[in-house]
Image (cartoon, rainbow, N blue to C red):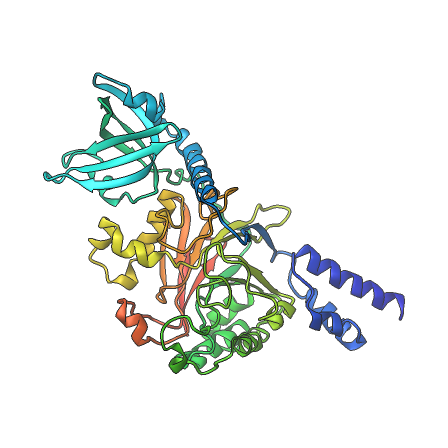
Length: 468
């Protein structure tokens, strides 16, 4: 074997290691054949240098057995992470522990931080919260005429909040309720060059309701073969395809699902998806996070789609598979810090849609509430603050659903209707789907609008909608 071919093999392996991608059995077999080595090597060098992807944070945690102390430590870890965010708030000067606040005998102004242990209503409609920290418990009363009553109505169990109020006899009468929140943006980060990213959520390949024509139109658009002249020009400048989960329909996800399946085997579902994605030009990065329909553990954080189920996805040189949730940095180069993207599929959203007072009272149809749900969770700096709002793995070392880093983009799917909004400099984007509505979705009030793909102009941070 000549030295040039060996050098190309070496660079292929280095590329995969740098991208934190595993070399599949199929790829290793291809590296034994000269014509495949040449093809793979060329494909690696078709992605322009300005289109870059790095996995900033992934969350993988596996444990066979759990004990009570694992759950306890999980909540302590969460409390400390969110407490640290709240400690920086101007409104919470002179913080005291709950134990000390409970010892106050006269009305005295106190500031404290606690996790919501209980929530109830008095006969007069006042809200009582029982807060706890590592020192003890205390009751907090928010009267109906308090300026923070509306915020208290929206407060859920297990949230970590700050309270300012008058303390006495083991009770605090609250004047202010502070959530961790996102700092006010001083400047919106923008790319120095014109480039684009698209959010193509929930393909649901394998379903009888999969709209193949729309997905084919999208794939052809990435190749410059579909859309108006302007849309085709934009396609040429699109470097990132963001897919926030549910790439396949899966098997056994809900009762009698088999009646709605066109492909009844998950291996074949992933293989069919890979056939579509292989047609996307190699100059575009494809980033896929896991969703609740994907064939892996449903408890969050969800691992990457299992390699043994989807080897053809792992074989695509421009495809990056990440956990749910995860943080990915795109478009970073020497003169630009890049954009951070928080991927979260969105399984918890249905819970908050029904439980948070202001979201219930918004007057919006369920499928249109995603933007305010995502904003609500950003303000709480947690993707599922109430334990039980999503299935979660208790990690004693880290609550992986805490939004530790404020992202530039918060990307989701799951609801099957595209929503675009903004909060304090964070672009909030929920993708649509490529599946028509099912009876199961209608039962929960979800009315999908398939074929909509949010298009992000990275130079202006403006988001428009492509229709397929």
